[in-house]
Image 1 (cartoon, rainbow, N blue to C red):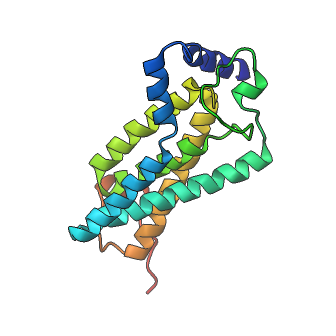
Image 2 (image 1 turned 90 degrees about the vertical axis):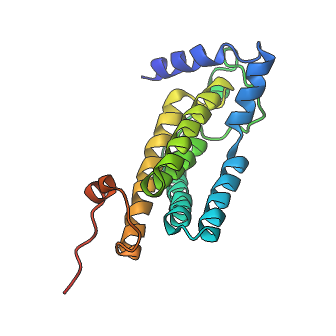
Length: 196
Protein backbone atom coordinates (compact mmCIF):
# COMPACT_ATOMS: atom_id res chain seq x y z
CA UNK A 1 0.00 0.00 0.00
CA UNK A 2 2.85 2.38 0.83
CA UNK A 3 4.41 1.74 -2.59
CA UNK A 4 1.10 2.52 -4.33
CA UNK A 5 0.75 5.70 -2.26
CA UNK A 6 4.25 6.81 -3.28
CA UNK A 7 3.65 5.97 -6.95
CA UNK A 8 0.46 8.01 -7.03
CA UNK A 9 2.20 10.88 -5.24
CA UNK A 10 5.08 10.70 -7.74
CA UNK A 11 2.68 10.67 -10.71
CA UNK A 12 1.14 13.99 -9.59
CA UNK A 13 4.25 15.61 -8.16
CA UNK A 14 6.61 14.93 -11.06
CA UNK A 15 5.22 17.95 -12.94
CA UNK A 16 5.90 20.29 -10.02
CA UNK A 17 8.56 22.89 -10.65
CA UNK A 18 8.30 22.63 -14.45
CA UNK A 19 5.19 24.70 -15.25
CA UNK A 20 5.07 28.17 -13.70
CA UNK A 21 1.34 28.75 -14.18
CA UNK A 22 0.35 25.31 -12.89
CA UNK A 23 2.74 25.65 -9.94
CA UNK A 24 1.32 29.06 -8.99
CA UNK A 25 -2.26 27.78 -9.19
CA UNK A 26 -1.45 24.65 -7.16
CA UNK A 27 0.35 26.68 -4.48
CA UNK A 28 -2.60 29.05 -4.13
CA UNK A 29 -5.16 26.24 -3.93
CA UNK A 30 -3.03 24.14 -1.55
CA UNK A 31 -2.59 27.04 0.87
CA UNK A 32 -6.12 28.49 0.71
CA UNK A 33 -7.13 27.83 4.33
CA UNK A 34 -7.52 31.54 5.19
CA UNK A 35 -9.80 32.16 2.21
CA UNK A 36 -11.95 29.14 3.12
CA UNK A 37 -12.29 30.30 6.75
CA UNK A 38 -13.28 33.79 5.58
CA UNK A 39 -15.83 32.29 3.16
CA UNK A 40 -17.48 30.30 5.97
CA UNK A 41 -17.63 33.40 8.19
CA UNK A 42 -19.24 35.30 5.29
CA UNK A 43 -21.80 32.48 4.93
CA UNK A 44 -22.65 32.76 8.64
CA UNK A 45 -22.93 36.56 8.46
CA UNK A 46 -25.06 36.43 5.30
CA UNK A 47 -27.37 33.88 6.89
CA UNK A 48 -27.85 36.11 9.94
CA UNK A 49 -28.39 39.29 7.88
CA UNK A 50 -30.82 37.57 5.49
CA UNK A 51 -32.59 35.79 8.36
CA UNK A 52 -31.90 32.37 6.87
CA UNK A 53 -31.30 30.12 9.89
CA UNK A 54 -30.40 27.09 7.77
CA UNK A 55 -27.54 29.12 6.24
CA UNK A 56 -25.95 30.50 9.42
CA UNK A 57 -26.51 27.28 11.35
CA UNK A 58 -25.00 25.36 8.45
CA UNK A 59 -21.94 27.60 8.63
CA UNK A 60 -21.58 27.04 12.38
CA UNK A 61 -22.01 23.28 11.95
CA UNK A 62 -19.41 23.37 9.16
CA UNK A 63 -16.91 25.02 11.52
CA UNK A 64 -17.77 22.43 14.18
CA UNK A 65 -17.20 19.63 11.67
CA UNK A 66 -13.83 21.11 10.73
CA UNK A 67 -12.82 21.42 14.38
CA UNK A 68 -13.81 17.82 15.14
CA UNK A 69 -11.99 16.58 12.04
CA UNK A 70 -8.84 18.42 13.09
CA UNK A 71 -9.15 17.03 16.62
CA UNK A 72 -9.26 13.54 15.11
CA UNK A 73 -6.15 14.37 13.08
CA UNK A 74 -4.22 15.43 16.18
CA UNK A 75 -5.08 12.16 17.90
CA UNK A 76 -4.20 9.97 14.90
CA UNK A 77 -0.93 11.79 14.14
CA UNK A 78 0.20 11.25 17.75
CA UNK A 79 -0.57 7.54 17.52
CA UNK A 80 1.08 7.00 14.14
CA UNK A 81 3.69 9.40 12.75
CA UNK A 82 4.32 9.33 9.03
CA UNK A 83 7.08 11.36 7.40
CA UNK A 84 6.07 13.77 4.68
CA UNK A 85 6.95 12.74 1.11
CA UNK A 86 9.67 15.37 0.77
CA UNK A 87 11.32 14.00 3.94
CA UNK A 88 10.97 10.30 3.11
CA UNK A 89 11.98 10.72 -0.56
CA UNK A 90 14.15 13.85 -0.77
CA UNK A 91 15.57 12.98 -4.18
CA UNK A 92 12.25 12.08 -5.76
CA UNK A 93 9.73 14.59 -4.42
CA UNK A 94 9.74 18.23 -5.54
CA UNK A 95 8.55 20.44 -2.69
CA UNK A 96 7.52 23.77 -4.22
CA UNK A 97 6.18 25.39 -1.02
CA UNK A 98 7.74 26.00 2.39
CA UNK A 99 6.53 23.44 4.92
CA UNK A 100 7.84 22.04 8.22
CA UNK A 101 8.72 18.36 8.40
CA UNK A 102 5.84 17.49 10.75
CA UNK A 103 3.41 14.57 10.49
CA UNK A 104 2.06 13.89 7.02
CA UNK A 105 -0.85 11.60 7.95
CA UNK A 106 -3.64 12.59 8.05
CA UNK A 107 -3.91 15.84 6.09
CA UNK A 108 -5.22 18.71 8.26
CA UNK A 109 -6.46 20.68 5.26
CA UNK A 110 -8.40 17.69 3.93
CA UNK A 111 -9.99 16.98 7.32
CA UNK A 112 -11.06 20.60 7.83
CA UNK A 113 -12.46 20.96 4.32
CA UNK A 114 -14.33 17.66 4.45
CA UNK A 115 -15.87 18.68 7.79
CA UNK A 116 -16.93 22.00 6.29
CA UNK A 117 -18.36 20.34 3.19
CA UNK A 118 -20.43 17.82 5.15
CA UNK A 119 -21.75 20.48 7.52
CA UNK A 120 -22.79 22.77 4.69
CA UNK A 121 -24.22 19.94 2.60
CA UNK A 122 -26.73 19.06 5.32
CA UNK A 123 -28.10 22.60 5.60
CA UNK A 124 -27.43 24.30 2.24
CA UNK A 125 -26.76 21.59 -0.33
CA UNK A 126 -25.40 23.84 -3.09
CA UNK A 127 -22.83 25.42 -0.78
CA UNK A 128 -21.89 21.92 0.34
CA UNK A 129 -21.43 20.87 -3.30
CA UNK A 130 -19.08 23.83 -3.90
CA UNK A 131 -17.16 22.92 -0.74
CA UNK A 132 -16.80 19.30 -1.91
CA UNK A 133 -15.31 20.42 -5.23
CA UNK A 134 -12.91 22.77 -3.41
CA UNK A 135 -11.90 20.02 -0.95
CA UNK A 136 -11.04 17.71 -3.85
CA UNK A 137 -9.04 20.47 -5.56
CA UNK A 138 -7.09 21.22 -2.38
CA UNK A 139 -6.35 17.51 -1.84
CA UNK A 140 -4.93 17.18 -5.36
CA UNK A 141 -2.96 20.41 -5.00
CA UNK A 142 -1.36 19.31 -1.73
CA UNK A 143 -0.15 16.10 -3.35
CA UNK A 144 1.08 18.04 -6.41
CA UNK A 145 3.17 20.51 -4.36
CA UNK A 146 4.84 17.64 -2.46
CA UNK A 147 3.27 18.07 0.98
CA UNK A 148 1.21 14.86 1.15
CA UNK A 149 0.69 11.36 -0.14
CA UNK A 150 -2.79 10.61 -1.54
CA UNK A 151 -3.39 8.34 1.47
CA UNK A 152 -2.83 11.30 3.80
CA UNK A 153 -5.52 13.24 1.95
CA UNK A 154 -7.98 10.32 2.01
CA UNK A 155 -7.34 9.83 5.73
CA UNK A 156 -8.05 13.52 6.32
CA UNK A 157 -11.27 13.29 4.29
CA UNK A 158 -12.43 10.30 6.37
CA UNK A 159 -11.84 12.09 9.67
CA UNK A 160 -13.42 15.29 8.36
CA UNK A 161 -16.53 13.44 7.18
CA UNK A 162 -16.81 11.77 10.57
CA UNK A 163 -16.37 15.14 12.31
CA UNK A 164 -19.02 16.70 10.08
CA UNK A 165 -21.51 13.92 10.80
CA UNK A 166 -20.95 14.26 14.54
CA UNK A 167 -21.42 18.04 14.31
CA UNK A 168 -24.69 17.58 12.38
CA UNK A 169 -25.94 15.03 14.90
CA UNK A 170 -25.18 17.36 17.82
CA UNK A 171 -26.87 20.27 16.03
CA UNK A 172 -29.96 18.14 15.40
CA UNK A 173 -30.28 17.33 19.08
CA UNK A 174 -29.95 21.00 20.02
CA UNK A 175 -32.27 22.29 17.31
CA UNK A 176 -34.94 19.66 17.99
CA UNK A 177 -36.27 19.92 14.40
CA UNK A 178 -36.70 23.71 14.50
CA UNK A 179 -34.68 24.01 11.29
CA UNK A 180 -35.78 21.74 8.42
CA UNK A 181 -33.10 19.46 7.01
CA UNK A 182 -33.05 17.34 3.84
CA UNK A 183 -34.65 13.88 4.09
CA UNK A 184 -31.30 12.10 3.69
CA UNK A 185 -30.11 13.70 6.95
CA UNK A 186 -33.20 12.36 8.75
CA UNK A 187 -32.39 8.86 7.52
CA UNK A 188 -28.65 9.06 8.18
CA UNK A 189 -28.69 10.87 11.54
CA UNK A 190 -32.07 10.38 13.22
CA UNK A 191 -33.08 12.37 16.25
CA UNK A 192 -32.42 10.85 19.64
CA UNK A 193 -35.67 9.54 21.18
CA UNK A 194 -37.31 12.03 23.51
CA UNK A 195 -38.06 11.04 27.10
CA UNK A 196 -41.65 11.20 28.24
